[in-house]
Image 1 (cartoon, rainbow, N blue to C red):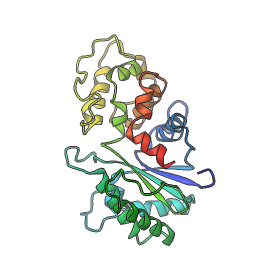
Image 2 (cartoon, rainbow, N blue to C red):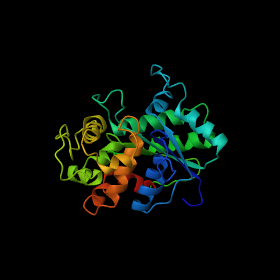
Image 3 (cartoon, helix red, strand yellow):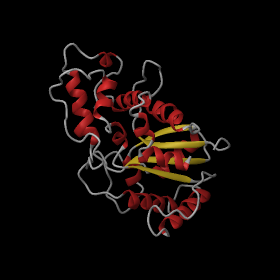
Length: 270
């Protein structure tokens, strides 16, 4: 990987810098997880929305704010900052339809199909996407690998996060309370369901959002509110980075984080 310039196109948004003056999205993927998983850092991290994937499909109705497809976003970035290969990581469940039915395997196949038919990607990139689609389509089941996944020039590898990145952050309720410094406090409004439940489809809005809202009402205020700005709506990435960093420093939670399917998949392809 060191010989290649690898870009990560990841679902998320640029956020106000932390006091360390580093974008939380970059810190999540190029510091916290890189160090925990012992992988090489990405040369470039580009925030995307799932709308970028949908905008590639000519059969899908146009969505507000989705005028640019992922392939177009990649080419625009490549022109500005060249890279040799890419990883695309996106949430399976879109924020605007958390109760819908989605399939990680189907979405992955659809991604490669759309990339292979792109009208803007270079021939090498389209051909690599086509070969990847063929390999995946020929599997007897999603877990039946026929060869070793490798990052090479022109390749795009997919990490579909099921149901979403925040699933990493709700595996341990007590761990979240330790990270927030509220273990021994009564917290009116604290969510009691969904923690550690792999079937929870919207851990961001059903668990983390009300949890942070609840601690913001506490008096005296928890010290963490002076360390991380805003709430889970205005600074979602910042809070996600803070919790992830604290979890990776917690010996009771760190194994759960690195053993989560999102991290396992990332380790496999890198």
